[in-house]
Length: 167
Image (cartoon, rainbow, N blue to C red; front, side):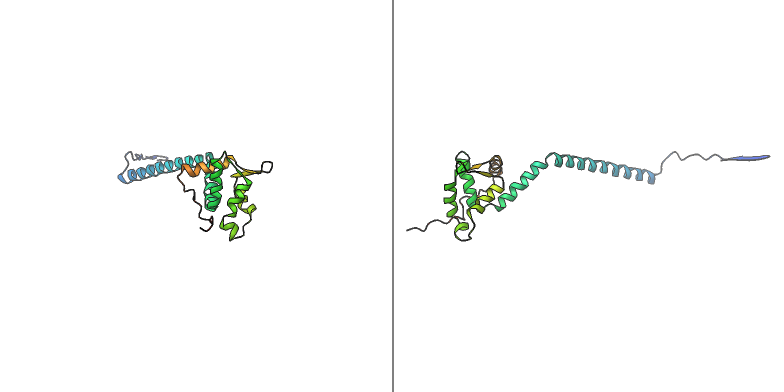
């Protein structure tokens, strides 16, 4: 600072503090540490957002398969199993015969259309009226492979099928 009046001049020089005290060093170290943590968290969040955006279809498919598995009847799994073992098809007559033996047909009055409709609405099978056959479509094959590759129980033998009493 410099102060000058006629006949008198005053000048003071204040040296800047060149060395940091221990308190300031600790604060800077803490701020740097927080900055590093923040950068790491931001990087992880960015990677997670990229992964989710990139794999959203796979995540949705996994969700669809898990939901379908929770809702599917064991006897419907028998039908899917038969289809995977026989060129991805099952005749309508065989599917109806399997359905008639279930508790859903005999005790709960569920219609055959509702029973097979679940598999169709889930995107696992399709019906071809010209050949009177149900066909396992690619999503159905992928569902079956998902169950097998993840060692998920196939609900077979079906506990919802009523066997004829022994004579």
